[in-house]
Amino acid sequence: MPAQGPAIPTTAEVSSRIRPTIMAIRHLAPGAARVRTHISPRGHGYAAVFDQGGVRLSLRLADRAAIGHWVTRAFPGIDWTEPHTLDLAAERVFRSAAPDEPIASAHTHAGER
Image 1 (cartoon, rainbow, N blue to C red):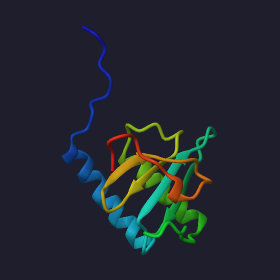
Image 2 (spheres, rainbow, N blue to C red; image 1 turned 135 degrees about the horizontal axis):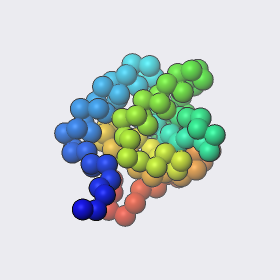
Image 3 (tube, rainbow, N blue to C red; image 1 turned 120 degrees about the vertical axis):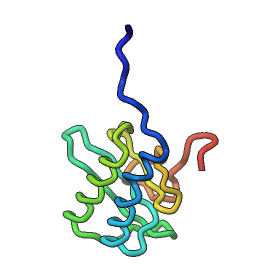
Image 4 (cartoon, rainbow, N blue to C red; image 1 turned 135 degrees about the vertical axis):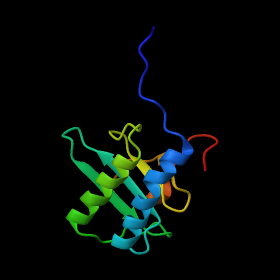
């Protein structure tokens, strides 16, 4: 019998993990609309939080680290060595532009919104 990889979580399972995460992010960063996160080759998390207009919110380093950790734990099947953006309203994660590029230049894969 061939080895099986980790089970792909159902939409309900993802929602049950991400909704508390989104609530915590909104509490810690009022006005947050998107979170761009990735993990560096050294294993350090990175998170930048943006409002609806794409303006980066000013947060303490500890808060950005916590938010990055929460997001990566809520979506364990994603390759976080590549930058991804969590859209809080859509409750979806998209592969995004490099972490130092403005959120307006972030893109999604064909067919995703």
